[in-house]
Structure formats: structure tokens, C-alpha cells
Image 1 (cartoon, rainbow, N blue to C red):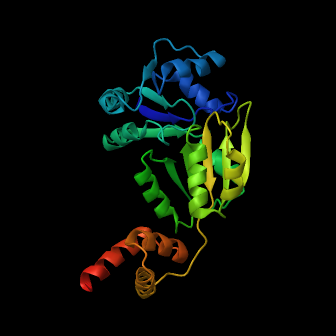
Image 2: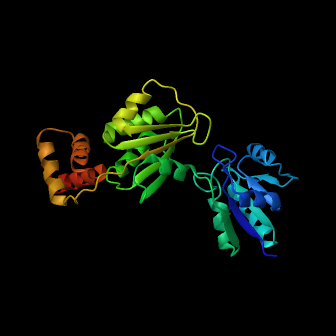
Image 3: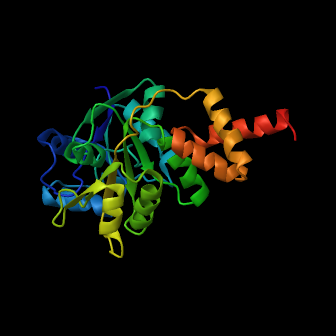
Length: 281
């Protein structure tokens, strides 16, 4: 019998949110690789599925080293299930390396689709769903965060990302300073007892969160940038020269122009440097 790796989606909160087929796979699999075996035992116990020494840990620290073992198992004809603590493996959780290794070996990868925090939050957001991008967790370093915000300045797709409860207030405040009137939805503890959805403009939501202590799993859905006509290099260059003539620093001028014209701050800054080099005063 041919082996296969099965990606099994598990509940993001409410344990009832799992398919019958997913439970069958977990019951029949020769081995089940879990992000945290202790966490996964709760799901197995809830549905009275025996583990029988079939649970193995696969997390961000050992995923690379476990690939060969999983490829071996599938190659020998075993059915291997892969689950994360919540949702669909590989979506900001371990799993993508294993899938790539199995595919590269010419073996079978299947799935029992189901819960995903990304799709769950997007589906209740009320924002555009035809086109969206998933950004995972935001960087912690401020410089890297600023670069990420800069790429969102002209991103027309709806943006979905995860954030920790410790940083969500800071993040929404930063976003309000960048894109104040854009709509945003914060989905907290989805499908759980204290589920909460906060909607409004970034300014509105920043005010709601001010001074509040947040807890739980958080997904943020941010409106994309409004569609704008392309801005020519000539327009950007003219704005650069005007702002510098007013005495602004290169950095301040670049930030202001990027915001006013809806272009990348990096584009403005690099054009300003090139113009200064080509036309030294």
C-alpha cells in the first residue's frame, strides 16, 4: 500500500470544529507528528482516540531534522498525519519543510482541510476577500516593522497578520499614524469563550485599545490601500526638489512625499540620493 503524508487541520479553539474525516485519519495514521504532543493529547482525549505511542513532536526547532524520518516512513508505505497546535499546519506553523521534502521525494501529500485562523478572521471581517495577502507575525525590530509598513502603503489587497496581545496596542497605534482612516478588524479568541471582534478605522480602534490589556490569540485584518493612478518619476522628483528647497532633511522629505503621493518611501529616498549625486550643489 502506498504511503502518504496527510496535513490535518485541527480546531483553532472550539474542539467541535473538526471534520469526521480528520478524526478518521488521526485514528488510523501510523504516526502523528504534532507541534506539541502535550497540547495535542487534549484533542485525542476529547474524541477518545488512542495514541498508542504514535505521537511525535515536530516544531520549529526540529522540523528540518525530522524530514528524513518522515520521508522514510511514507516511503515504506506508512500513513503519517501532521497537525499543529491549532489550525492548518504550514500556515505560520511548522509543516512547510516536511511537505516540500515529501513532494521532492516524489511521494504523496494529501490534506483534510478545515480550520484556519486566517480564513476565519477574513470571513467575518466585512472587508474585501477577493484578493488578500498573509503577512504572518510582524517583525519585532522597529526598523523592520517600518519597512513592512512601507510596503503596505500601496498594497491594494486586504492584509491579514497575526500579532501578540503584548504588542497589539503598539502595532495598531503605529498603523494609525501611518494609515489612520483605513478600516481594520481585530479578531480575538475566535471560536472560544471570550471571542471578540473590534471594527473601525485605525484611529477608532487605536482609541478603543488605548490603556487596555489584551489577552489571547489575535488576528488582524487591515483594509488595502485605495487604488491610485501610477505616480511618474518626474512628479516624485519635482516633489523632492520642492521639499528640499524648503529646508527639510532628506529623510523627512522622503517620508512626507511617500505619504502624500502614496508611493514607497524607499523609492523616494533612492531617487533623492541619485538626484543629489547627479546634481551636486
